[in-house]
Image 1 (tube, rainbow over the protein chains, first blue to last red):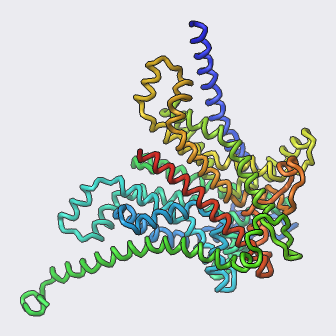
Image 2 (cartoon, rainbow over the protein chains, first blue to last red; image 1 turned 60 degrees about the horizontal axis):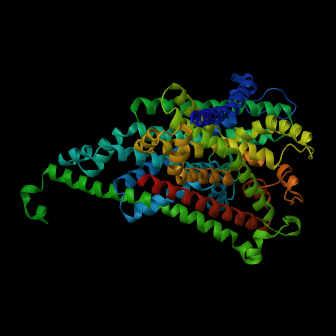
Image 3 (cartoon, helix red, strand yellow; image 1 turned 135 degrees about the vertical axis):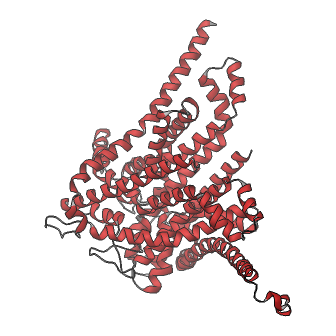
Length: 281
Length: 313
C-alpha cells in the first residue's frame, strides 16, 4: 500500500517536471531569435540608415527610408479604411446580436480571420491591380485593411458587450438620440478595449508580406504616390534576405530589427493599456 | 403636416433640432447595417473572384487537377499533387512537433501556475511568439536554422540540402504553438473546481486529476485549438516560401519527401504568381488558392464551432 502511493506520487512529480520543461523550453527559440536579430540588426541602424534609399550592390551605405515611408503610408491608408468600417460593424454586431444579418456577418468575420494572407493578395490583385493596370500602394493598403478588419471588429464587439446595459439605458432615458448614445457614451466607455484591438491589428499587418507581393510589389526608390508601386519593410526584408549579397543581407537585418522593435513596442503598449483599463481581449 | 398647419410650431428650433437628430439616427443605423453587409459582400466577392478567375483551369483540367503529379508550366501541364503533399506534410510535421508544447503550456499555465509574475511572464512570451512577423521567422530560419539542419542531415546520412520540408516544419511548429496554447489555457482554467476537488478528496494525485478529470473535460476544446493551429500552418506563406526550397518535383522516397526540398500551395503561389504569363498558368495558380481558401476556412470554422459549443455549455 505504502509503496503504491510512493509510485503514484513519483509519477505525479515526474509529470510536473516534464510539463514545466516543455512549457519553458518554448521560450528558448523566441529568446534566440530576438537576441540574434538584435545582434545582427542593431549595429546597422543609424541616422544614415533611416534616411537613405538602399544602395546598389557593391556600394557601401544605403538605408531603408523608402520602406519606412512606404510601410507608414500603406498602414495609414489601411487604418483609415479598416478602423471606421471595423468599428461600425463591431457596434452593429454587439448591438444586434440576434438578427440574421449579425449571424451572417459574424460568420464572415470568422471566415475572414481564417483566410490565408496570400489569398487576400490574389483577390486584391484582381480587384484593383488588374483594372488599374499597375501595382500600386493603394491596392496594398486595401489588402492590409482586409487583414485588419476581423481584429478590429472582434475587439470592438467584445469590449462593447462587456459594458453594462444600464449605461445605454440611462442615456436613452434622458432622450439622447441613438447615434449620440453610441458615439458619445458607449464608444468612449469601451475606448481602451477598442484602441488595444486597433493597435494589435496594426502590429499584425505591419509585418504582413504575402498580401503585398502582388499588390504594392516593391520599389527601390522613395515614392509617395499611392498609384505607383511602393516598398514596405517586410517586402524589403524578403527581397534582400533572398538575394545573394552580404551588403543586402545586412540591410535586411537592420530592417528586421526595426520591424521587430516596432511590433514588440506596440504589443507591450497594448499590454499596459489593457492592464491599466482592465480590458479583457 | 402638423407643423405646416400650425404656425405656432413653424419657428420652433427645438422641434427642428429633434427632427434632424431623428434623421441622423436613421442614417446612423443604416450605416451600421451597411458595414455589416459590406463584410458579407467582401467574403462573397473573394469567393466569386477566386472561382471566376480559376474557371479556365477548372474547365480544362477538371477534378484530375488535384492528383496530377506533374507541374510543368513550360509544357502547359498542371497538377496540384506535389503542392498538396507538401502542404499536408509540412503542416502535419509542424503539428506533431508543436502539440506537446502547446499542451504543456496549457496545463502549466492553466492548472499548475495560473497566477503570479512567472505565469504572466510566460504568457506574454507565448503571445510575443505569435506577434513576431512570419518574414522574420523565415529570415532567421534561412541564416541560422538551415545550417544547423544541414549538419544534422549529414549526421543521419541524407542529402544535406538544409532547406526543405523539415526546416519549414520546424519553424512552422514554433509559429503555431501560441494558437493552441492560449486557447488551451483559457479552457483548462474553466474546468469547474468541484470536479477537481472531488477527485482530490478521493485521494487522486495531481497527475491523476489532470489525466482523468481535466483532460477528458477539455478534450474537445483542446482539439479545436489544434485545428486553429493547423489552419494557421496550412495558410502560412512567407516563412515557408523562404525555407522550403521551391521545387515542384515529387520526391521518390519518404526520406526525400521529409528532408528534401518541396513546395506548398501557398509558396508556389507566392513564387510563381507574378511570373505566370498565360491564362492557363495563372488560373491554375488561382485554383490552388481556391483549394487553400476552402480547406483553411472549413478547418477554422469547425474549430470555432467546437469552441462556441464548449464555452456555452
